[in-house]
Image (cartoon, rainbow, N blue to C red; front, top):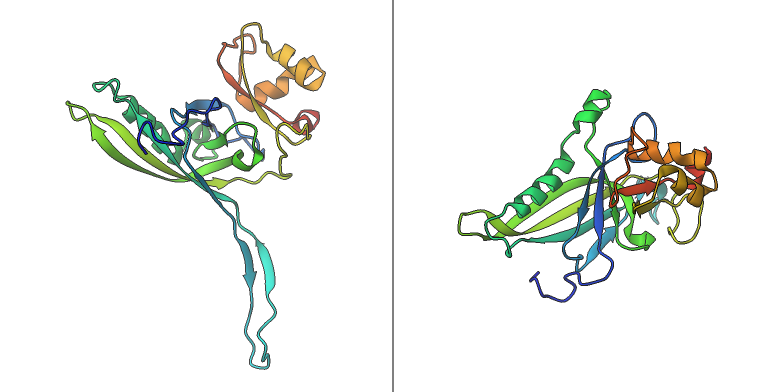
Length: 240
């Protein structure tokens, strides 16, 4: 996909991939944010797939075929391409660092090893407020093609193809704009924000700051830097 091609991502709303520590214990909520991977160019397309599993056991006495039996539903799969380009800085290693961040999503995190529950990171893909393209997942595969190199041999352009597998929650979340109890969203911290003020605004109780801190792996609630992206837990999680 060329830098100026149609669908290359000039939308006012950029897609992003929030990379989280895996949860601790039996929680189905992603842990603290490791990194927020902001897309330089929005994807030109997304592919979604899901399979319903059925089985049928043939029998000799059945002339019209065996009756199928429903066995369950597989997790949703999403495929997308990420276009990386740093041709404006041909001697830099920006593309290499971004590719490394994506490849690390298939590696076990040190914190999860310390918690004696080894797991690669969990990720949350989000593009605007559309529930069809926002879900919690793990990255099952990363394929990278370097296509342009600088004069020193450092890659300055690449295409990364990701396959995400949804991690279903106990109750499927609704569109983040619908006000459903199970919805989560991402809040970007601005000057003057505190966990207590965010908790009061979101849930009507300043005491709910502890839930925000727990979901985001915040040890010191007094340190909240502008620009930080926070996962806001659902009202159901806060009340639970």
